View 1 (cartoon, one colour):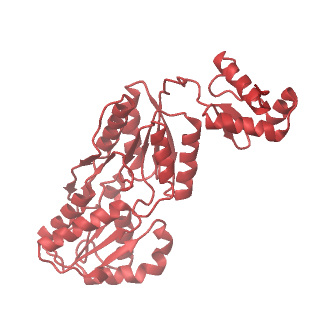
View 2 (cartoon, rainbow, N blue to C red):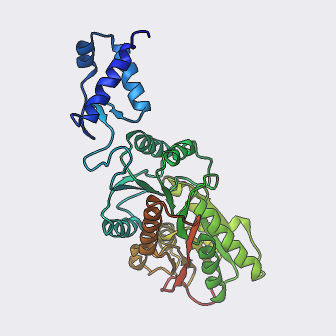
View 3 (cartoon, helix red, strand yellow):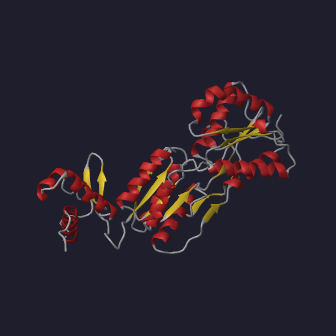
Length: 362
């Protein structure tokens, strides 16, 4: 037999220390320079050894910090799993997300688990960085995640597939990627759009406008429900009265203000993608001298806490946020325990009537 390659000597030495528990999950191993001196080898040989250990998922490199044994204090080691779940949402402290995250944390803590929370800010690049770290560090036993711009092709699908290959359960929240086989928990967005439109129609509005989000799967489903309600009621669909926005649209509002206001003048009621958009649209109309709801009725979706505090309290569609959090936690825990789950859990929406919608319209 030939002599064992030097990089394998380094690998075996580190593996032996792990077996003897001289190195534990989360411990930093020797630096490249120290390993070069210990084994009298080149930097290339050391890096080859570390790369091999990474492939075996025994270590993880952290830029600017060093190389660490995979896992963390509380990591169960090979053959077990951590008592930690990851929750990745587009935002954390804004809009509907605090209620969802709090409900998830309460549910999993009862099972002896904790959560680590991260935000993508609805950025595909940030999503990639977060998922790459999770796939490489082997720190979590399950992932609850909200998709980023789910109406668009996503280059990060391979990272989700890698997590699933590693037998890390993945559950999508609010929206999902249609070309990825993973369960999702959401409000029934198609029904949300449909019930909102029906509510406006029942109030006597036949000249309807709408604003939807084009790079988000939820926006497409809410649009579809809105259109279905109009078709069932025999109401003409005027494409010029349906506006589309994308992530970061706030920067474009000043440039598009005239088109929004012209739409507001043509219709008697407008359904907005969510309560945030509805609030911005309401402010725009009020600043232009229009009265809400006398000149235009405005409706949102989600029933966020802020919807009650707008200049005119907002009629909206209730999104069962706490139930979303509880159910997504229950589904991922079942998967962690090896139980079978369904592919889709879609909760029923309900209209919440406040003062921003009135009878008849103009």
